[in-house]
Length: 287
Image (cartoon, rainbow, N blue to C red; front, side, top):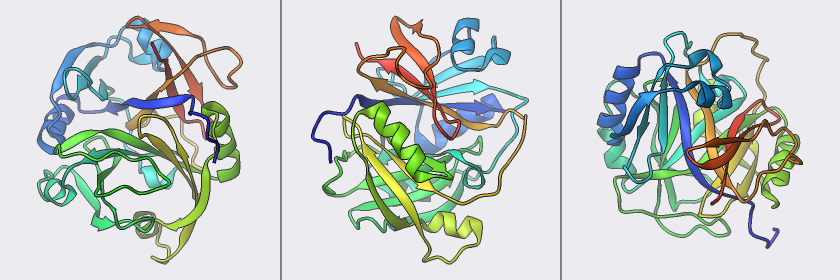
């Protein structure tokens, strides 16, 4: 493992497209206790920056703690629900929680539990529940009960804390892993593991294992890359659910392959990066 600090740091937020905006906000409040920290409209410059020019003027809300909201919800009535596990790209946002069993038991009816709380194959110190949110996006609600070396993972006593892992589905682990290693300036761990929720959804043997890469960022955040064989999906429809994730990076420069134009949003330099699976990542320069 590369001992140098990663150039990627905190997973700042995720952006979700909501066909039913008001219903989604109410659902996040009931399920994850996320409250609006700011509500407004998507300005043309931010819409263009997020590759959502057609949604300029749409309602938008930031949800979470007032000092550090981490879920951006954008109204998109034309967005079409998708099944994250049946397409490549963003698979799940992993959110740190203090008691996953209690939280999962209290999820409202418009959330779909795909996998009840269970200890993960990679370590009994990680217990998670997989669920679909109100816009069809997938979450791993994860309790970390003890350190899990060599990974650097946070623990919390809060009911719901923050996102600390993003999970990406790819047809080619090696290619995707290499792109993210170049972006982060570190080497990932590569191994195979059982992913029960995928096996159930795809009708595969429950013991089937997947090639996985895990890349550690700073601030106890990381990305998991899962290689999943899936048929190609072609659609011009705007997908509901997770549109992009926002991650802090030390410095943004034109030499980063796949980086879009630099922008200044809320006083910080940022740019949109497109990964090898077409995944959208808003890179935010650390102040």
